[in-house]
Image 1 (cartoon, rainbow, N blue to C red):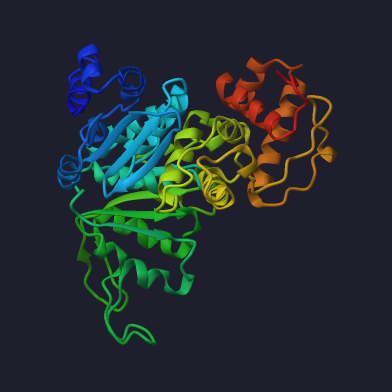
Image 2 (cartoon, rainbow, N blue to C red; image 1 turned 135 degrees about the vertical axis):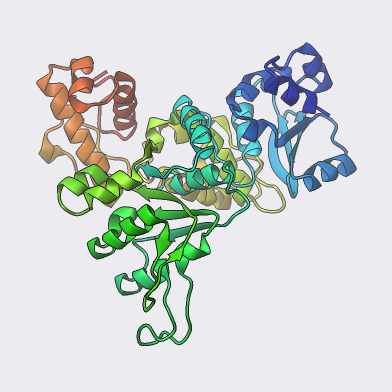
Length: 435
């Protein structure tokens, strides 16, 4: 059993030779992966082993930990063998793929999957925030994993034994939203045959995720503000407010500061929610997450028979070159489609990868005339094309100077390089263009 290597890493000693020998020669894989498990929340849940017999693995799983059995194999396989039990057979000559698979296995149970430095830094910050009780505002494009991050904050907080309630403010009818959030008395309106506590009271003692908070009608924003300020709700039809103890996490794919300036969002509510903002980058801006997320989707959706049980290197290369306008949701679609197309094959190969969007036409020069970008097919394509126009126009104004371009756009040069690489992968730049 390889638990000592995880414990040694937690104690700051690293996974040394003794731990590697105990793991049956997996010290290289463990040494390159365990440092990515930045918090005790992850390391304390995992037991790695070379010879985890069934009774031992079952006992580990019953204790709430995840047992991962490691073996060397010419034909690699990643598969669930039971609740909280995973088998990872890998080729030592293909360590990058094995590391991505081990990261995915370690995140089972709804925990975040992170292999990119940006994501690891974000989780480290979120872990510190979880120890407090302050409101959190999550901003980022649709499909980047804001609810996963919200659940992560809840699970590491002192409220972890309380309820986690998620509500999509854009998905509920506006006429019912107030009653659903704050509750109502019997007979408060036509059809209110029974009283209802509302989602705030349902989350009492826990966490309430207000997803798509930017869609909340202005008329309700003032009532929301009072609830956050006073810690109490006034159900429809009631005359006395009721105390609630709820931590608020708000999420949005809009820039709420811009919405407030445009008069579509109350500035005082923004300040109340925006105690600690966290921004989730688009998937194309955190390429180190793509392979681990793909393996996590494989574990989640693979058939019970476990075939296919791997993602081949050529398929991973295709995934990592794609711009992912639909973010993690698009990646999940692609992996589910690939599993179906692969059938009983041992691994998902390049021919099984079919993307949701067609490849955009390549442009001959770095400067993109506005008329040369074809009409986008989805809202995410609109955002992608608009961003590409802004980047290329700014590059053109600065004569191709990336440092000046990044300063003008308010992003780092590293982020600009990622954006240009994404555009090149999407066929919007000729090879070497704007490099």
